[in-house]
Amino acid sequence: MHDEVRMHVRSEQVDVVLLRRAVDSFVDLLRASDRGEWVVSELRLGSIITAARPGADNDIDVHREFDRIISGLAVLSNAPIAPEGWSDDMLKGVADLVEVTETTGVDGIQLSFGESDPLLVTTQTCRNARRALESGPVSLGAVTGQVDRFYSRGNRHELGLVDEATNVTITLRYGRAIEEDARSLIGQRVTAWGLIQRTPGGKKRDMRLDGFKIAAPRSGLGVDDMVGLYGPDWTGGISSVDWVRGQRDD
Image (cartoon, rainbow, N blue to C red; front, top):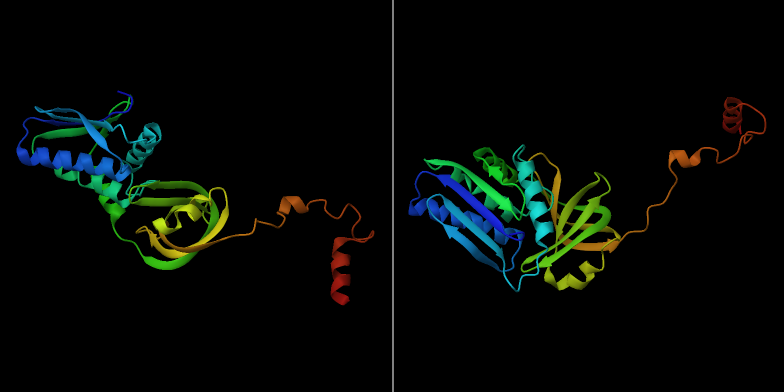
């Protein structure tokens, strides 16, 4: 099914502890990505096959969510880096799968999203998710950039802001009380301040938003814009060196 998420734990035998760990981790990953209702569409034993799809009242954009999870798993398969748009709860859902991957007799875990090819979730992927969760430095600070994303569902309220200093999007987490103000910021250049959570490597990851203001549009000319600005004879016929020397003498 195009809107179905499926997990396949390949194992020689399934005891109740493995079943609980697998299902709990599967549910945690889904609920962390989207707080709406998910309904079980399939559950089989032998090897564990679990599938779920959005409920009737869940208007989630499944393709967008699936793309976010798939791209994030690809990042985590290679490095302990928090993927763009992933919450700590999503990272924890993957990290907790290590209890399944390291269970004796488990050959591997495959996750399928819609009609995409299955993705193999390895122990290394899970360990990278755990390392990405490790607390980095936390400090008060401010960030300026353009707001390019708004998300509000359940207990999750977020804005995405492209930090002008790094050209990387960081997540701004805000309270429900400023929902309407937050929604109006899409496309705006904003200076936001609050408590910044960094990765273990020191990169800004997300911010607990305490306040913000609309920033003035960026102004000023770049070097390329200055070329030819004064015309070919702006020194009055003397060399640029003599012109600068004359300014100093004055």
